[in-house]
Image (cartoon, rainbow, N blue to C red):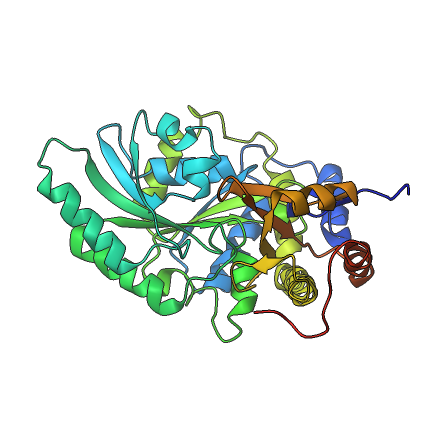
Length: 360
């Protein structure tokens, strides 16, 4: 049977929200000063100041998450230094050494655990191990965490606060990779952007819009002005000062207007919740983590994965668990329709055992 291919492994395949596309077109008609000295960028900073309740913050608009993370980290990571991050973090596994390159050779010290998130206990243990090894090791200057984490789970307020207390005690900076920060925020219905970041000790946030409705728009939000000054010294050298910055900030302005960024994230999360609930009813699938954003991770055997591909359903092959099993990732976006999810489930029902009650 000739079935249409369903790409369901990443949210970066999604299109552009109509409001953002319209704003992008408007920015093309508006002739203004380059390099961020334009009315769109000025407005963007004002909007972010209001949303994050911090008049002292600074912003640097960027075009990619890797560039955003790397420039943010290099504001406090030096060639002789290091930062702590999770082994599965994007900066460690998926950025081609960009943070090390931007910082002139800074080192990433990784921490592994089964939760996919850093925690104060593991960080303390790591610091004790490094301290025991002596003073010739690279000096730790900060910690980077990802919200949502790479396995789609959510850091609680208390988890982040505990990490930030370690940072304060040791004079570390705290960076947050917020590629899916909007998805995390709508999962915490009573938490404001300020409460999710600087009010619990986050010094800089790499906030991503590209996965959630924008064409290519990211922004580093510095809650620590000294870090912003350091980053601005390097932005030209790293090739990320954008001549027509207005095309980035026009997208962000539309994204933030009337809470669109949260509305789009809410749709993506609802789609993932529906998908997760349906997938949990198949005997061949094992849900690995709670669905707290727009990502669903399954444990399947190699034979099952081959059948999934034969059905022309293409999730993301996440990692090898052992010789017999792998982990695959399904990701929904604001554009994902329930009808598409229903089609996925319909195809699965032709090959796999299905029950009406979820299998936990």
